[in-house]
Image (cartoon, rainbow, N blue to C red; front, side, top):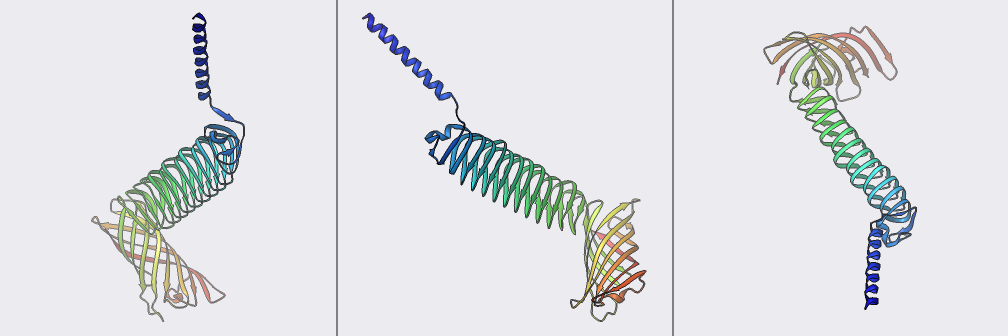
Amino acid sequence: MRTFYFSSRIICFSVSVLFFATAAYAQTPLTSPAHIGLVYPLSSNGKNAAAYTNHFSLHIIAGVSKAETGAAIAGVSNIVKDSATGAQVAGFSNHIGKTFHAVTVAGFMNQVKTSGNGAMVAGFLNTAGSMHGFQMAGFANLVPRNVDGTQVAGFMNMAANNSQLQVAGFTNMAKKDANVQVAGFMNKSENVHSQVAGFINIAKKVKGVQVGFINIADSSECPIGAVNIVKGGEMQVSVSIDETATTIASFKSGGKILYGILGAGYNLKDNPNPLYALQAGIGAHWPLLSHFRINAEATTLVLTDFKKGYYHRQSLGIFPAYRFGSRVEVFAGPTFNFVQTEHGVGQGISNHYIWSEYRRNDKFHGGYIGGTAGVQVRI
């Protein structure tokens, strides 16, 4: 009986030791200096590959791991359940929980589930929950939360906020705040420092400049474009005539200082063929008194008969302007002009050039001082 008692105690003690040893082993992180394989589970870590932290991984097709601390290279895909530092390179895609001080490169796509830290480069798409660092993709970078870094994409960048730079071939989208956006077609954000787009910029509050064909904002002091729709700015319809009898009806829109000019008209002189005018430019208001200011305008004018040849004039005008009431303004002042013509189109509408020259292929260049006067109504 005594022997049985001691035997039972020994068995219980052995079972307890085995239980605690097993539990301790289960809680010990699994690490491997190198993980080599073909595709999961055909690798040196086998079926437990998803529980291992590796210092180096190399897979012909795809590798699976818990974490990577060095380099992970795969012919097709790397799948890292938790975190990765160092470099992850895949022929097709990387799928990672989060990265820290990492360079993640894929032929097609990088996907970081929570937060990315470092650089992400993909042939087509980068996605991350949030991003601190640099993203470059052939098509798009998509981040539903914040980006503290630079995004460069062939087509589109999207983020909730971006504190640095977005550059895209087509469009940049920031749901709330952005610093600088540069796009081939469109930029959109609520609050932004500066936007540059090939066609349209949309924002609520702009601290710096907007440069585009169309700029839309609630407040923007320095929009540079042909059409500027600014809630706190000015919009005017203008009719003017210059020393060549070219009459222009134009739309002027912008902020309190800078504004854009877009106009069309007709030359009233008796020309061999009717000459139609198109005008575009940029201007600036310089307030002096409550009803008196100076408008400086740099414009380009094209006269055409829609046949052979052209008339092209660049002008800088300084126009003192006086406002009657709150809406009607009259202006007049000198202009400094440089003219280029081909095949004699419009060459005779001005005959007081202070400098001129004829060039080959029936081209003419000249410069002269002229004047413009007009009236404009605020809308």
